[in-house]
Image (cartoon, rainbow, N blue to C red; front, side):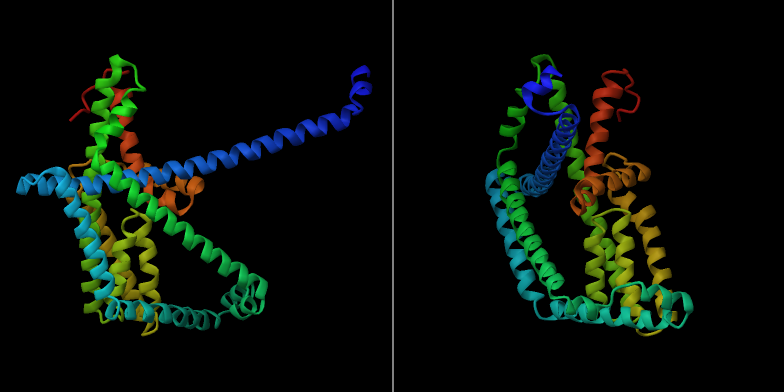
Length: 351
């Protein structure tokens, strides 16, 4: 009672203020952690890009005896040239196909809607959805959508530039940053942690190589298969499937949807054939292509990869889906070397 009179706040109000303060602190802490996780994820993508550059530069260095830094500069120039030539060379034929793809998909969706609406359950389903005309009529919502797209585009460009420049700096002199991290480790553990860093780098290196080769193989198979089946826009769909294959398990499934919708505009039977084709391709990719190209990397159980993807999507959104598999692979290496081998003393799995 004396304390209440001194502060001028009754006990109930004081408890409410304390509760609100705790809630506000928790929200601020969550926002800080969320932003920190996003920055760490961006840094991890930069490490992946640096390892990619380093792998190509080391390959040139070993084959031509060209010093590492000039080889790295050559790799960067080559990548920029390939990117520029690709945009210029594909700007007319392939981009026109992607324009057709953008025009065809909405028509395919409308066709699918008309077919499903013939059934009672389909009509009920679509009546629960807001029509596109209603969305257009709502100018406030439209402006909000445009603003969101613009903001996301700017954010993507900034993130792309951060990853590009940071990746180049990390690739130029990786030992500088590795030695800086090792100085934070007790002296008697530095050599072992250095071995862990090297093992992680090799794991990411082989993961990237295997993923790239798998993407190329899958893109060629999809393009050739859809071309044989006379599905329109086969090259664009093949490239889309290759790019989405960077995300294991979920990417190939997402790539199936546009191909089925486009095939559906020709006939339901062709759409069914495309679905069966993609199921076969996904099995070949899972059991033949990926194991063949990634046999030198640390084996990542599919169940663990899916758990990592779901968890990181919840924490980071789409970016988490991209980095889940390589991040899980390097964490698996760290657990094996630092816990299974060093703590438990079990070195049987050390191959």
